[in-house]
Image (cartoon, rainbow, N blue to C red; front, side, top):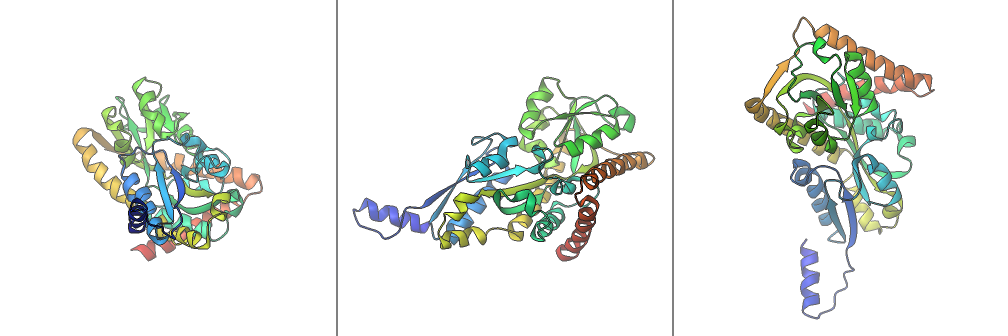
Length: 337
């Protein structure tokens, strides 16, 4: 920041400067501008890159789908609509089949652990084919997603029958179907309107996002089970990255990989904890009865088996990748505890 201020002062005084004009990097995401992600993840990353590049890179943040709709995030980065996009892989069904294994229930309980495992999986090269069209900066997950209902509580598995529930991705839609619900595909920014209009009865989302998208205004009941965890990617247009100077590339590289994956994961864990306290004061949170837990778990196991079988049947290493992820999760739990 200081180098920019100095250059501006010199220009204002009519003095020459050898510093070149900063290269603008457009960073798009779909969270509200007031969300914790805006400050903890996106603005903090922009400041870190600015500092590492000595002001040669100027990262401008575009929140709340102002530079492209959420489902188009990856293509927006690929095609240069945005220079960098933060998006959910599952918003484009079937495009990131191995990455979406991270969504399967029961793999981990903390976003920091899931993010660490996902980044290790990416760093292993197992996902190179899925991301060949862009320059990936880092991947991560959020914490376990829960079930949130407008005015119809879900206290037992039978309560789900016929319920129209927002699912974030097709993989989670399979789980909801196994639980007896009717999945409705919607990106997170579209939940509020559809819940308010009665198009859906409830939705799958993390605790922190209930508050981020103002959904607490419409939500009376929550069911705590840990249904899934979404996979996220922050990725950059290849041509934009390759056109940068070596110094500018180094600034981007220094803020890629595990460091920022863990920052994102830890941020989600902290935000979830804060949101739970807030929601406990304004709504009801139900735990799955012990007598029913085996039925819920059996549905989750069926959804997992269905997805891995589909991948294996297509000649993809679904089961192999799942086992690798479990190993990475174990490693990360040891490293982060």
